[in-house]
Picture 1: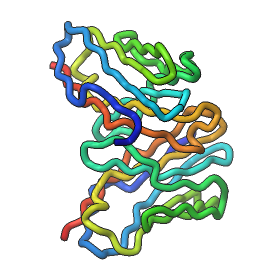
Picture 2 (picture 1 turned 180 degrees about the horizontal axis):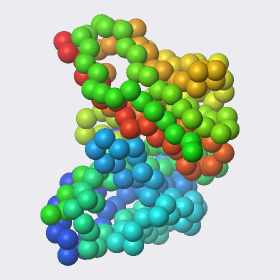
Picture 3 (picture 1 turned 180 degrees about the vertical axis):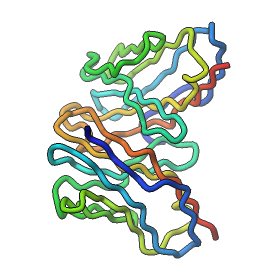
Picture 4 (picture 1 turned 30 degrees about the horizontal axis):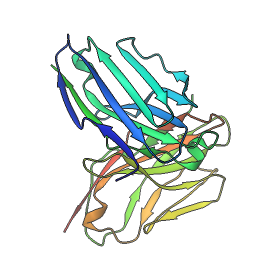
Length: 115
Length: 112
């Protein structure tokens, strides 16, 4: 158990479906992140929330919609996805103000397949 | 722009062999450097880090030295085990509190 829990672990969805990914941490961190991991590509930072406010949105298509209702929970709402969106979606957290130099704690990821 | 380049994998070694995974970077400032490891079916874990030139990060028998003159942060281990089989990511951060620049990852396979 890494301290960051992601559900579901695996998700298969059609292009017309709507689904949500969930991330939960109880480490006392107050910055949370969504990353996309595709085969043979560097990790792509999608969204950053610090103190429950979105502070970065790296040109992510609007079919991905994040939500951070409190400092312990982060969601990624998905709708009308494309097959190229199939990937491993990783959630991470860190202590705000510490950031990368103090290391991120990652969840195990959600393996998403769009059919 | 800032970037991280890792050697392509997979790297296949026998148990107890010496490991080197190369990582070089391009950065405009003075980055901090990291190695993360991803075991099968898991998320990434911070393995080690170095925040300034000539620093050596070490953990679990792995070590890497921040070489500013060669802009490198190569990962080494003297004697690998089957349990070290994983994907290893090199990354750097600059002034941003949030942004890490990642390498593409190197898959390591250790055979008994």
